[in-house]
Length: 168
Image (cartoon, rainbow, N blue to C red; front, side, top):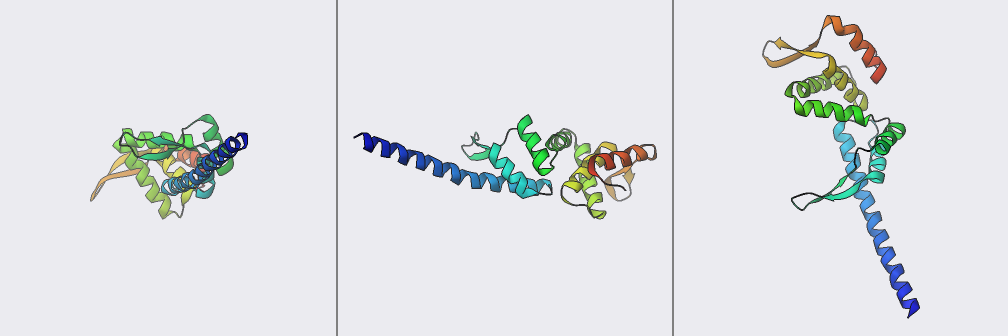
């Protein structure tokens, strides 16, 4: 009888372990997709760290998804292992969602970064910096245009180099 209970406990642990392993892959894939959508340079690294910190959460509609809370440990590991500045990215996305202007300036920054040949995390960093310094200016045939003021140009260049390693 003792052995039967022991074998049942071992079987239960194996089943739970298999579920945990089965969930690691979808969490990893979710992390990779998030990194790709956000333009990070190393999506596989981001996916591995995301999978390590992610938990399954149930949404109000009953669907379940992976979620990694923005804890100091998670943010530091993303920065250290993958070079992803999560806090800077979160600040920029918050600014973009609270203000249509900041979000549009960020999108304009992404376009300018692409025109200059930047991609991935470097383009995302460029866009965040651009959105901080850009001001709205009238552009013929366009609802909005953005530019960097001449008086801000030196500070803008210095910040691009400091934050992103980009020398204009």
